[in-house]
Image 1 (cartoon, one colour):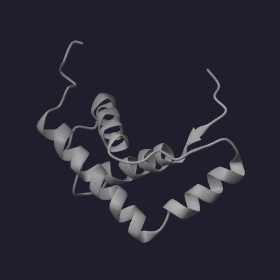
Image 2 (tube, helix red, strand yellow):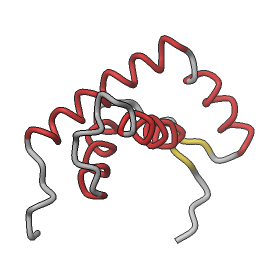
Image 3 (tube, helix red, strand yellow):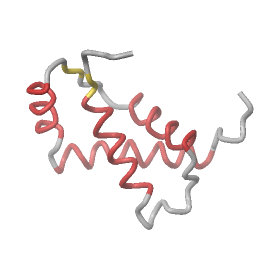
Image 4 (cartoon, one colour):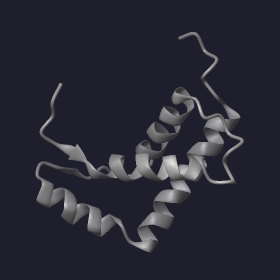
Length: 95
């Protein structure tokens, strides 16, 4: 399904999760797709969405969110999600 809108926060979180999960601090955490998606979902549920419908809007919102202060704020939520998923992984569930 093609969509004509994008959640810029989702793009940022997905990228930051990828970067964090290969860092030395988190290499021991499960790298399976289910755990990674759970980390992204928990993070996004704790962050505001920023939907846009144009490439110009995407660039504008990305620039607003891509500050050192905002990256630290977003990373805190991602790190919290990593620890939640690490403590309660669902990758072994059959559901």
